Length: 216
Image 1 (cartoon, rainbow, N blue to C red):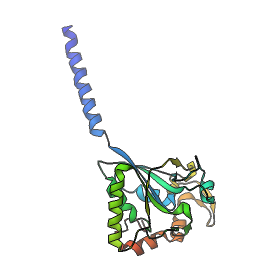
Image 2 (cartoon, rainbow, N blue to C red; image 1 turned 135 degrees about the vertical axis):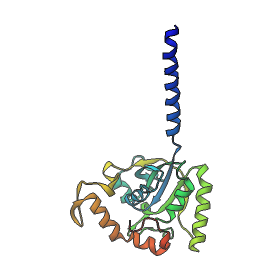
Image 3 (cartoon, rainbow, N blue to C red; image 1 turned 180 degrees about the vertical axis):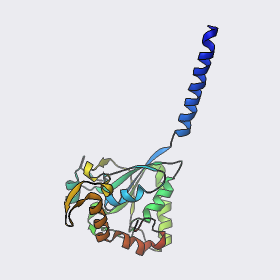
Image 4 (cartoon, one colour; image 1 turned 30 degrees about the vertical axis):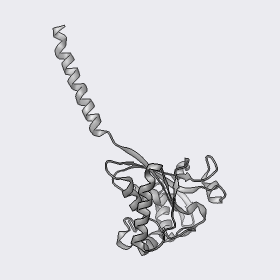
């Protein structure tokens, strides 16, 4: 039995080290849901934010279960194009993400975003009860900064439905697709679309140097 004690002690030490390492790497992962027009663009912007772990393009806020992209863009579902953001709250706070969100969209436009028109392209923040006060305070700060009324709604969190696989990380995809720009890779189609839609130009017009990703 005495011969086993050093082995048991070593096991206990290694187990303690493993627990400490796991604690050190534990992250406070939370979620945010933003609708900012084209979800490809929202995803591309928030993937650049330190502390964001993962982004998923999808649909929320409507009445149809498991909608497709075609369903939503056709209209009548009540859904917004939106992005679910998983973030490490020890690195970036929810309030910071909301503050960034305003500066990536046109929060003065109630009819869509940039060249994308219609209900599914409107802006909105889908907040949990614990997130709502941060979202509303941030909205008030945005209105103060712009000296204009922000039309973006702060809505309760609703069921979120991921979009089809080909819409995930579209902005960096290498698959060749047929577009009005010809047959090009997804990431090139995305860049051409974003520029033609005037997203960055309008964001810079509204926010100036406070627009963190316009043109990036």
